[in-house]
View 1 (cartoon, helix red, strand yellow):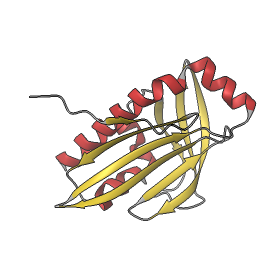
View 2: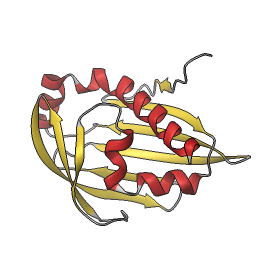
View 3: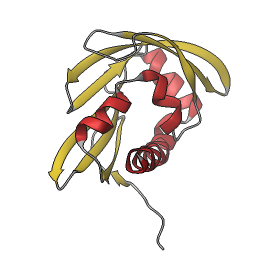
View 4: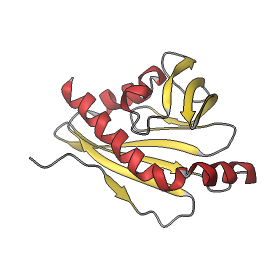
Length: 158
């Protein structure tokens, strides 16, 4: 049996990466998991998300949530939800101003296409340096693909 993989997308946009997968589950079920920051460590494919430390049980537009992270060294970050369309899209950013987005598209027969996007266009120079030092832009596509595979496994096992 061939391993399950997410598709890494080439968006031809500077400092932007994305991956996509089809999950055999309703969009709302998947969205409910993503909209609960306490669940993010369960499907994090990067190993950087250590846990949820603050925020509402369910994210919403304008919600702030804190996460314990680790990229080379442990740190904490506060994110703000900057886009929210129930069952379809959620995006958040933090002080470095890049955004993480999940977009869900119902395909019928309870299938949902999920696209995860990292967008660091127009970020401050300090943030650009952080991305360069950590190698995040090079690593993100693989991490995002792993996250989507984990998300698929969780959603399809429920």
